[in-house]
Length: 174
Image (cartoon, rainbow, N blue to C red):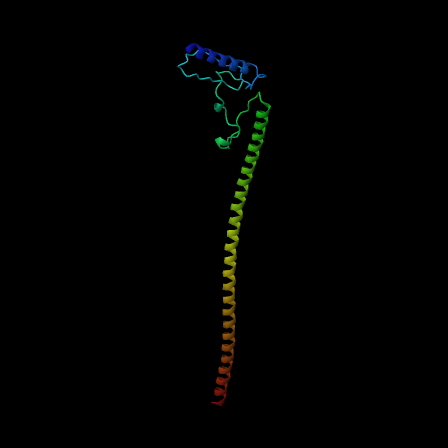
């Protein structure tokens, strides 16, 4: 029984190894190397392979600086699989979208700054309008007070003239 299980594992590993070496057969993933080892049937089998051409001693791609540092981590374009034209196209599209996103964010920031400037100008204009309205009210009050004072002055001048005339009549009659 154990020998049959080992032969089945060996057969599956051989088929997997052939499919990975020759992408024309089967599903073909583009990986170039897979290590297979005989494992006893009672041990779990773990197969790991990479889809890129880099060797194991290159640093992981996470150590590369971000292509768009202003983007959040989950919005960063993922590096493409260089063996897949579709992956390269998706990567290019993602980079274009990320660039457009960056431009839109930049434009939003500029528009928000402009909005703050316009709000400040509007506040200033409203304050000036209130100040102007206050000045108009003060001007109207002072104009009315001036009119009243001129009227009082003319009445006082008339009264003074009448008093002078009366005084002169008394002086002339005395």
